[in-house]
Image: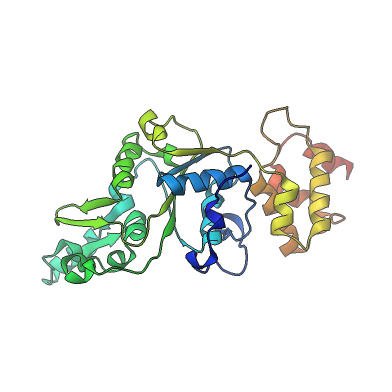
Amino acid sequence: MKFKSIFDAPAQTHRRSRAGAGSGVGDFRSGSAYLFTPDMELAVSAASATQRPLLVTGPAGCGKSALARGTAARLGWRYLERTVNSRTEINALLWETDQLRRLQDAQAQRLDPRILAYVRASVLWTALDARTAAAPLLLESEASSRPPPFDPAVVLIDEIDKADPDLPNNLLEVLGGLRFEVADTGHRVTCRSGVPLIVITSNDERDLPPAFVRRCVSLNLKQPDLASVAALHFPKDGKTVAAALQLLVDTLPVPVAGGPPAVSAAEFLDFVQACKELQVRPDSQAWLKLAEACMLKGRPGIAAASRAS
């Protein structure tokens, strides 16, 4: 499969990664160790080329959110994220007003008449214009017109299917023009830090508006190969990884063809991480108990394995 991958750009066009030296654990894995496939690189590159959001779907634990972190780590771009819930509105992704501080200032008779003094930038504002996001009052000065440093971002908008149906379409209005107006101020935020790469994930809990899906680049992820993912995250723990894989073979039924795997990649990595940190070996009495807690979780087969041990 040949195509011009976004990751093939000259090194000088990428900024040095801000990710930490370690890969992290759980939902805080930095993304510095992420198993990209050609299909993933193609979708990410297409989203960048078209300046469209990348809509990522797939089963829980397959690495949808980690794809955004992994992309930011490889490109050396800023990484921003916001998890959506049923109460999230479009303004929460753009800016929020600190009404509590405004009330306190009013009671103390030091209320600033400028609304921008109480505005806090959210992820999309920060992605579009990092300078004014850090100091919203700059929108009122000539300093905001000076070209800021090129500093693009990867933005993760996680679990959008949990949101009110109006949110996806409202979001497209902002992403389509890469600008928005801060309400009640008359000031407009525009894209000045570099066009961001927007990664939007969905667990398919609710159908998304067709108009929204049409204006995204889509990527459906499957559960990755556990051995390959574990080797990437734990290159020095081959024996533990091999024993964990064998445990799955011995205790869990073979997945139905075309169906989901018995254990997600996230659960498998958690188990190997726990074994490493807690110094639990395959011949330890805690081995099966830890496996049950981290990845098996009552699935058929573990009870029989426990009795056999």
